[in-house]
Image (cartoon, rainbow, N blue to C red; front, side, top):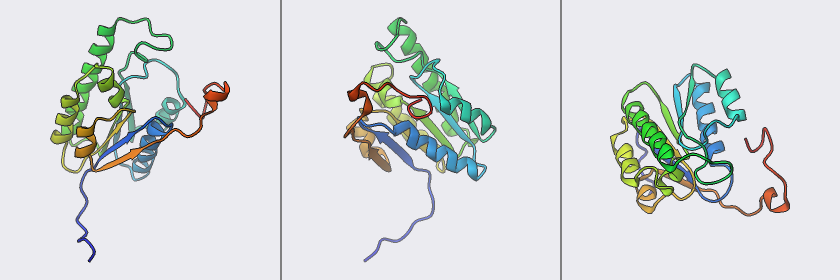
Length: 182
């Protein structure tokens, strides 16, 4: 017996795992939504001031897609020289913006890019993310990216995809490439 098909509802979508493609998958949703003239907000929790291809593309897709870069960069790695508390404050501010956005009825899709890393890095609490999921506007699609999505978050989500690393060019000494990796 087939299940009765329900009407549409806003989904909570999680892209997690150690493989590449989590942000890329979320950007695919943004691109599709923009194609239907739906408003999308992307809040970046970690990436900081790096210039990336998605930033350049999103500028071209305005006003449908809006990007707010809140992160202070990758915490404790690469070239991070900021105090941990600066990262915490940035993540907490991003969370406040997300709280307003998910109840505003202004957006069809809100993407919280790298939010799972912010939880894993103890910049914000997992409970704060679970609360966001519960408070979102009914028809809003909420997309959460980043490795280390917690079991409670996974259980509460409507759709979870785990990107699994099988092979990566970095293991052969090939650095991240413009237009592919950033």
